[in-house]
Image (cartoon, rainbow, N blue to C red; front, side):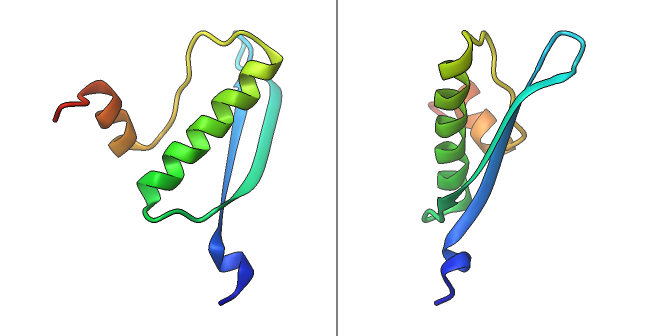
Amino acid sequence: MDFQAQLSGCGWVWMDSLRKIQLMGKRNLKRRETALHSEVEALRWAMESILQHLSCQSFRMDCKDLISMIKEPHA
């Protein structure tokens, strides 16, 4: 199997109140069992990375399934 096929890319950006990019990060992560598992791993990495630089008060993401799980964990 091709090594690159075993990876998935992810990234994050931190913007100030004027929506100007101040910090950003990107990396490859080992591909997980499902896309949702990969999204959780990417969110965990992004949160850990950002919190090393500043005390962040909110995070946003575009994975609808993960957002739904966080909002309604018992559903």
